[in-house]
Figure (cartoon, rainbow, N blue to C red):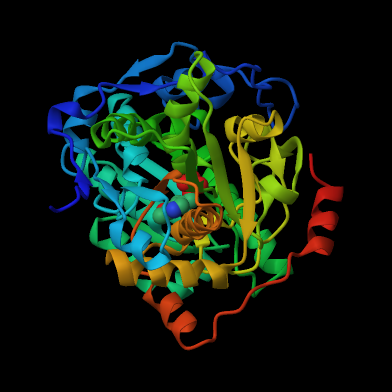
Length: 450
Ligand SMILES: *Cc1c(COP(=O)(O)O)cnc(C)c1O
């Protein structure tokens, strides 16, 4: 008999509502502050940046927020996404653990990012906006928004972190093929970009810098809004389709996860898979072990400070209470570009601070080692970001082997790595290096955070 491998849902099982964890949070979220006045932000402060529908989602307290018809229709191209039991990986590890992964790599961009890009483009179009400016680290967010813009007829301008712009020409070409215009950040097109280049002409860029440029671009034009691919409440909200589907699929499998794992850059795919499960716990259900995995080169949750800090380098973006390494901390150019951010989602930070979730940080070489083992067993070449989740899933499965425990592990495979083969080339030829945890730079950046 063949053991069941894939748990598929019909199209009519695409969730009808996003799950809003604000309805169930045991501790209220600290309000975000205006970067100039340091007073709590009002919806009017945010109106130049975002459509009102998203601003209201940012502060919404109802548990379920209906997914608009055109968004569900666009989701239908790649959702519900599959849940897969990793039989061959389990066998290779010789573990009694059962390993399941939710695979978000079948979307246009090849990651979970379209789950929010489609929703954000829809609400902007509805409000009469013509153009969206954004930043992208590894290029995944830029390509997701470029396609979402094409779906709803919006112009898209992308400030792409210099290190990725140079390492990943195919991501840039993908965005341009979808119709977006792309510039390397820091760029000469904005004041904040020019200021950084004047001081550091060879700057590899960072998400913090690229956010500054995209926000400045937005502020200078009436027809333009800004869009962020992670960190904010409404982004994590849109990603909860992942977790909602995974609950139905684990039911089909007849199991409940003991451990739930995802990588965390700004926290959106982590929140996406974890929040619907956490919500069940908060409403009186059982507790799950939930682990966010981040790179040791940018370890906000495990080595940062929980405090108010700016979301970007130029201090144009809102100030939020979160785990931060300091807004001017520039992480090493590790290959998981999507995880190079100084801060973390305020909701994920709050949950970590109060002990509802755990965090671990890992070096990139062992992550690639787990990623290659995954590719050789399951056939999917994971995004470098996703290898962080795989590393910890493998570690948990090996721990279960030692203790003989029949643990059920669920992790989010946030995307594929087919545009990241240069990173795999470096790993396979033994050239990939681990960066020491930059304790001195973090201490320095934290001394002027907030
Ligand atoms: C962007 C990205 C991440 C990191 O972002 P989060 O908001 O933390 O999810 C992780 N994996 C992939 C494949 C990405 O594209």
